[in-house]
Image (tube, rainbow, N blue to C red; front, side, top):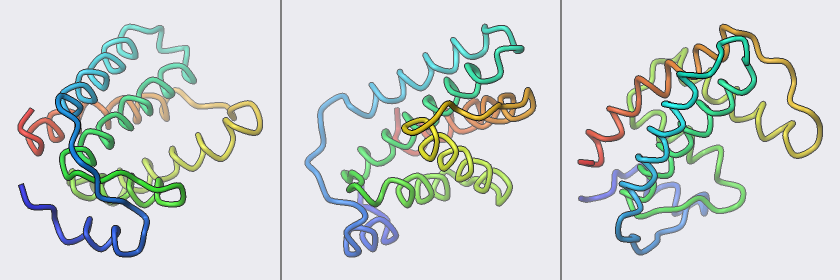
Amino acid sequence: MPRPVEYDNLIKTKALEAIAPTLGAVAGFLRNAADYQAVAEVLDPARHLQVFTLAYEGYFQLVQAVLEFYEVRPKDAGRNLAIQRVTASLGASPAEFAFITKAHERRNGTSYHSPFPPVSKAEAATMLAILAKFLPAARALTGN
């Protein structure tokens, strides 16, 4: 499938790089996303951080699946742009887009340097709802 121009533009700016596809990778990323979702859904909802983290990691697997489908990979400084581009490609609303962007910044901005800040029950539930909503969208987009 031809890659959308928005992805080609990110290649030109060096946020993404073109890659050769890896056989089975899209299906593998989507399977991982579904597994993260399944585990997050059975956790005690009082474990806000763990539900949020599993749902975020599941969403990132969707991002990886779409990037692989379009045969691109983020370069070091392009990860945030890649997440934003895929989020737009999946049809996120402005509120969902903002939440995902904030979740990414929060996770990466703290988890490598300090303990993760507290996550509310509502934030955990929102991240899980986003994963549940966009897993079928990613499957439809990629044909998997």
